[in-house]
Amino acid sequence: MSTTELLFTRTDPALGDFALRPLDPFSDAELLHGWVTHPKAAFWMMGDASLPDVEREYMRIAAAEHHEAFIGLHDGRPAFLMEKYDPSRLELVGLYDARPGDVGMHFLVAPSDTPVHGFTRAVITTVMAALFADPATRRVVVEPDVRNTAVHALNAAVGFTAQGPVRKPEKEALLSFCTREQFEAATREGSI
Image (cartoon, rainbow, N blue to C red; front, side, top):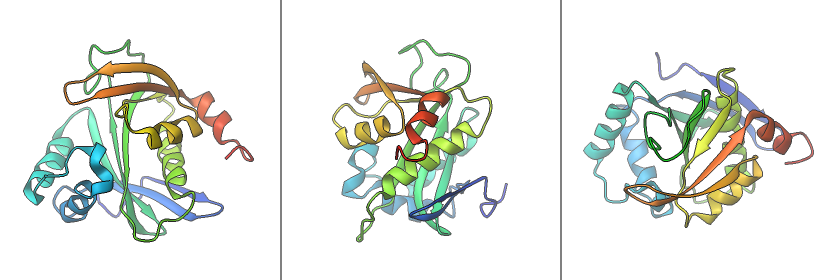
């Protein structure tokens, strides 16, 4: 699969075009290193990672059967990272009752010197729309750090309901779910 192949596109009426393409662990490592080690990405837990560490992590994901990573584009330029995984096999094994059609997700917006109002919400809306574009996806499952109140608010804005805290080896996480119907209701025109 080519890293120039767009796998999903969406136009935000206020902010322009968003798209997802496959992540290449080699050609994207330097870009990702700047994102995941930035102080605003503290909850990504890679702040001290070297460039080879980042390359290895995304090579591991690329080789994994139940985990994928994508670069998100805004008007054709890299602007965010999305990871998709099977929560019944990774991250949340044994921590909740997985259902058929559950998909786990992580996203990270690239640091910017000129923040754009509504941009991160447009990114998470794009990520969720991409996940639900697959008819097999019935529910998106997330497990952000309980202290990450900014992402909890974004999750709620696109329809997530918090289930409660779960203890993972690396953090105390807030397990949250969003069904297709919850996402559609939350993002219906006029509600966002």
